[in-house]
Length: 283
Picture 1: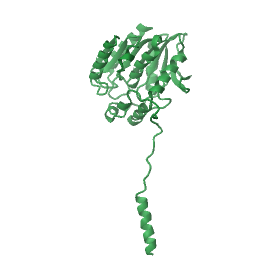
Picture 2: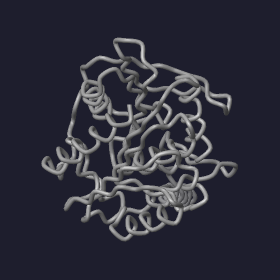
Picture 3: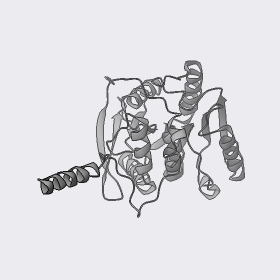
Picture 4: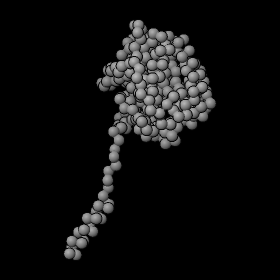
């Protein structure tokens, strides 16, 4: 009986100290052979994550289709395409927020398509099919997006539209940074660049490669891409001898997203008016 009692205690003790493995996410971080993107460290910061209010539910029901294309890293890229009714070499690349290519981005793409006549609108999927629905998921996705993969998707998109295409870009948050990178990568094919509260390029030698002027939309209450960051960007662009137009609104990070509970409708409308006028002047 005593031996049975000892065995029972041992079993209970073992069970008490058994380590239960936590549930792991399907979102993988970049391996050591890849380079993290310029906003990866921000995505890992809980304070930056909290700047993003959870988006309100929305379901896109408009036109458009998913297209795929080869990327120079041997993989496939994809995007959401709304093609011009008439054949056109005018293209607008739309770059997602940190949430991914969700229905909100598709809706914004449709709005731009309707207001820019004769322009093909292609919203690029920079997360390869994944979408974040929580701050934690979005943060992991943004950290996992390596520079190499992001550049490969953009380069693949340029190859998809062809060498005769004239391309402008627009993006918000993570996509604001990518819109600026798009202008650097696309070189002579690029005709315009709009970036909303995205991290600016800090390498002046890369800024010197910009073939066009840039329209930057920012918020003075943004604690991620702060007014100080924007001021540094303005100085760097002057040093690079490139034109930058900055519009600063009294608003928070992500103010232009209608699904953001802190959405600023007045600032968004004015920023869209500026963006649309800028883009129309480029096509």
